Image 1 (cartoon, helix red, strand yellow):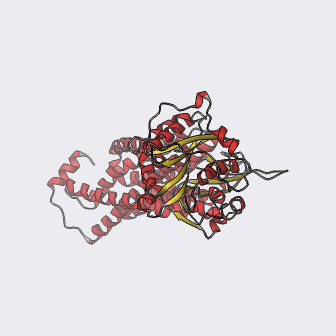
Image 2 (tube, one colour):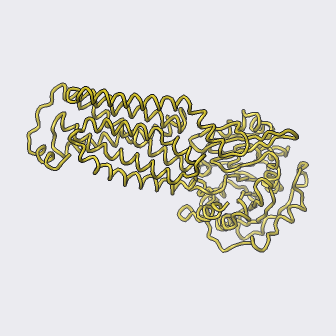
Image 3 (tube, rainbow, N blue to C red):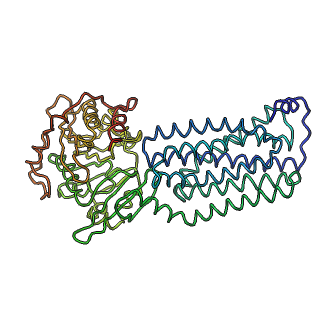
Amino acid sequence: MTTSTLHHSALTPARPPTTYARGARFLLLLAVFTCAACGLVYELALTALGSYLIGNSVMQTSVVISVMVFAMGIGSLAAKPLQRRAVGAFALVETLLALVGGLSVLILYVSFAWLRIYMPSMVVVTFTVGLLIGAEIPLLMTLLQRIRRQEAGSAVADMFAVDYVGALVGGLCFPLLLLPSFGQLKGALVVGAVNAVAGVVVVLWIFRRETRRSVRIMLLAGMAAVLALLGTVYVLADDIEVTARQQLYRDPIIHAETTPYQDVVVTQSTAFTGKPDTRLFLDGDLQFSSVDEYRYHEALVHPALSGKRSAVLILGGGDALALREVLRYDDVEEVTLVDLDPAMTRLARTFEPLLELNDHALGDPRVNAVNADAFNWLRDAAQRYDAVIIDFPDPDTAALAKLYSVEFYHLLGHVLTPGSRVVVQGGSPFFAPKSYWSIAATIDGADYSTTEYQVDVPSFGNWGYILATPGADGPPPPLRLAEDAPPLRFLDDAVLEAATVFPLDRRPQDVRASTLMDPAVLEYARHEWQNY
């Protein structure tokens, strides 16, 4: 809207609204509400996809928001010359926004899987979406004033109130409705279709008397073409996603799903001799290979169970492979497993390749599986445990870094019995030495005595753990197996004795402990793992 129009609106007495004007105004504000909800869903979808594919959620969120807000400003300026033909211009903007926004997830996924140009593509797509969203408000304000003139302040207040409420609804619908019901790819397509209908049909219906028939036909034909394209992609979405995702993995994918928390993929090699290699990936990071996962899990679990073990707590480890090792001790009376993602524990209960590996561990009557954020769960936990096994993914996102903080290990101390033992998987001392020793320093900083050790797991490479007991003044916990340990395939006392010896170039480094306010381990992990 131009300055002269606003000035004229402020001086001209408001006319009593007619029934038609009230109905048209309501429909237009409903279109504002819907378009605002769609716009925020596009923004959240771009942010979430980047976090799944690239990690570094803080960077992804910062880039998407900053580029989109900048583009919205450019879009608002670019819309000024279009206000004279606001009806057609708005319908065209919404058609393009529905097309680009609806296909945005597909474009970026293809860019990541096949073209390997994710970041440039993300900036271009985000800028385009922001440009079109920014053009909406000036055009909508012009259309509102055409229906019934208001003072500028009142018109802006009405517009932004509806816009912000729409953004609220869109922001809540994305994690609560769209992701669980459709997934990211199909969810964006559905939102694009809604955007097209709300932005084109409603506006053309309200202003049908003011728009030439040829313009209406052209815009409706464009909208129909966009809906047809989005519908076609929706029908093919599963095949497209499987094909694109397969480009990221060496072996055939036998299961894949995107949950509200992570991207879960299971692959399995085709073996002509011997057992196939089943692998679990979370957000693209390998969690285990069935060929050698016993090395990882034996080294993780059994040193922690060489003392008291009546009550055991497992944090993470939703695949139930660590749980399998715990349940091999007959004197373990109860095990609590806390994993964030219900989809992961559901897979461990029902997916045959995982069931075969974990020996149906989650079906054991001694086990209580809880789906919760471990940090928040510890704040309210009342029971105490003799041994704690912490099997989280590596701290390469802000959400995971808080689980490797001084504050987290202080919370953990509240559920430990005297003399209890804690073990933490600490990543690779070879590939990420600063990350590993930062985790060790963090546990030390939370008043534990620690023993660091490392083993070789072929699918991972060199891998490290930290065994800890409460009390910084106590001696380091001895690294040993229980006398009544079950028969193991990889670990014995000789292996554990050698595991505490680190080569000269991988011994303790001068690194910071990690806290909630200073997540040092996240900084180290990002810089180290990006080279591999």
